[in-house]
Length: 146
Image (cartoon, rainbow, N blue to C red):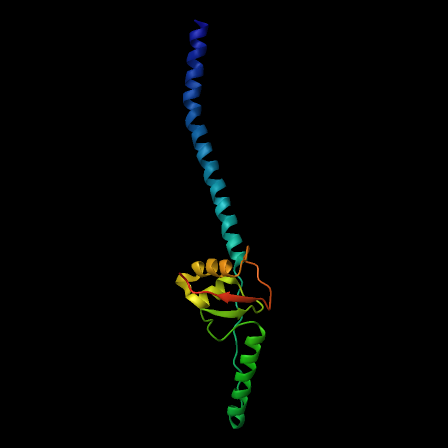
């Protein structure tokens, strides 16, 4: 008799405690997911860097033409110094690597964006390159794609 009573009490206690345990597990799971979302949002906010606004300077009208010509010349020379080529790379020619160049950029300029990856492989094969590493001043043959 005592055994039946004890088993009945245990059954009743389990029936009453089970919903409470389920509620606690659900509540904890929701709080953990909210903390994870908060951490994700804050890391995304930290990664965003505000961009500075560029203000144009007013140039006196008497010297506008000569100043604009100087600015154009300065901009062209500074972009060439930074390794940015203003000309297109032609197929079946040699190209000298400039600072900041990558195989993918060179390939995209020579073959277009849609054929850039195939161009990388062709340039590597033509120049016997085992990696994508380039050195400034290195001469590359730009082959035709087959």
